[in-house]
Image (tube, rainbow, N blue to C red; front, side, top):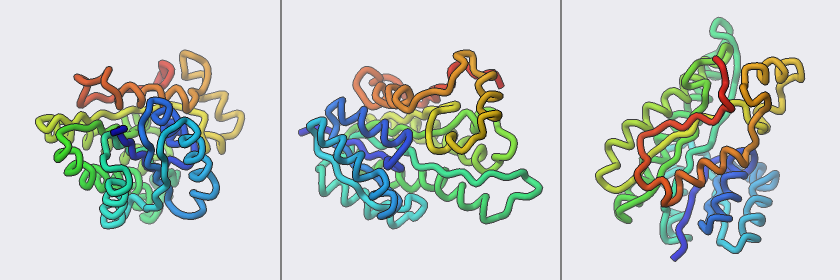
Length: 247
């Protein structure tokens, strides 16, 4: 039986690249989209691209910030594919603002998706992997969670929290042969960075030793490594993918 990878926030950007890469690796792909709009504007195309690579793929609509909705989605994925061997917690949003001006709503929205959403998914997928006696969980953090970033106290805090959850989950789930790792991308060419002005992009690139933004496919390559057998003794790690950024 082919293995299955469940990827949250996979209708575009990093998630879409990860889905296609893992499909190329032979995984059946469970694509999580927030809702119908995300499905029509990307999820459907990602599903078709994965199927074209010869694997099964299906989109599942779910707001990962909702505990019970995540439980239902995990059950649906298990019923559809039979297993969940890889979980990639990729869903993430930004609601930037300086501390003195940030609203409670801005903070809570980011925390609920980026931080609580990771807990929700681990909480419901871990029992499936425990019964299977193995699995790989890959959490998407950020360099902002390691170094901080002005105007992103909510985002930075949420991504730092993801690192803490990763290290703890790796210790708790390791005895059940479940590996848990995180990746911390820097500036990657995604819809999140497309909104940056050209002047800001030029300033950010100056801080990167490779003098360019990364590509989603380069991040997906690291996810492929962590999902596969070549990383069978890698757990509790945070892999930074930032082109040697100076902070």
